[in-house]
Length: 497
Image (cartoon, rainbow, N blue to C red; front, side):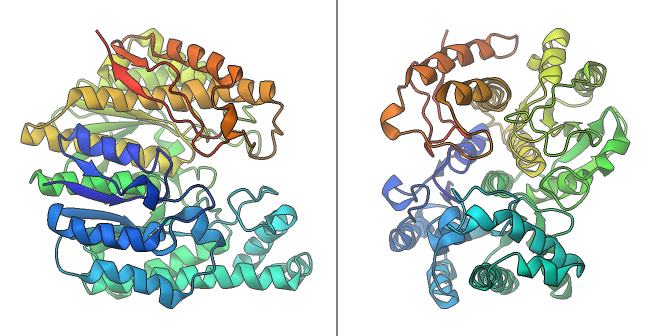
């Protein structure tokens, strides 16, 4: 009765976050050997992953599989690799053997408006912004020729050929869901815009899901790195025979849920609905109503447009709305009267938590009322994480296997990483390291115990000194940079008396 996970890549949000979701429900989630996983741009060992899946089909009741992880050896390898469609499908054939139930996911590729080639083909510097503009032009049909002229022909052809390959593979994945090789499929839209080829591809894939009448078997929705955790939560419901939780969605300004969050192509209420449903629950948008819900997700919604591209990590726009943050904190207190399991998804801005919200939660002493919290990267990442945590908590409580220590560790990790690191420490660390704020930085693997990082770890420890997070600490000298850049961190949290 365990879950086996082929992750999107080796980052903690793709591996440890998902494994932690299973532990909240009192279950085990196993991962492939580290030697089979990618290392940033170096692909994982596809044959080793196929062999590992062979063993897991008899040892695990459910498989949660990243199709990029299995087919290309990871997320970045899927963006830069030369694998053909037949080669990827051959690797996917490992899923066609009888055995465990298969919950799988893949992504519609992004086109970031950036010169940063760290996660993209080398030509992203200097052609990334022009490709982003071309994506919008091809979507709308406006200014196409001018946009084409700004990109060399060989770059255009390679970029479009890669998108066509991934779209073809997404259709093949939908076919596998239709043939019940894949029991549940989620196709995530990775960092999209409302006017982009990603949005065009999303609509095309949704149309085929509808034509094939796949219903709940296949979903197309915003998100990427969190989908493994979302599907692990869904398997927890199935394994523990728990009913689908009815999750109430509350927001201090319900109209704000109609806003489109940065890096997404649809209103945030659609992101919320689809993430909850992908995790196996039912979303109920409404007012506080005692006894109606199994869990509650409080949303700190996208702010009204202010500074373009503002985020908490590198372009924070220091205007803080303390009154609205206080209203969200009060909603957490109200929600705790309606359900035992309460989560908070902070999607006010990307890449971090709203410092005003953290302060309001401290003032209201609301942390002890929360079962889950997230505020990382995009709205899809954040909402999917909270949906997974709430679903796993509900499943564990229903079956009597709930592990409150794992739930508190999971929430503490998000507070440390999403607020302590992204909103506070990251900018300071980058300044001390002399990083270019417009690009991903590169930190030598020999600098992992850099004094700058050691001082940051000491300050992060103080983030946990708040009611509701007592008894949890950062293991000394455990802070590392898994991709040798400051965008994400890895650390060890431990319970102590």
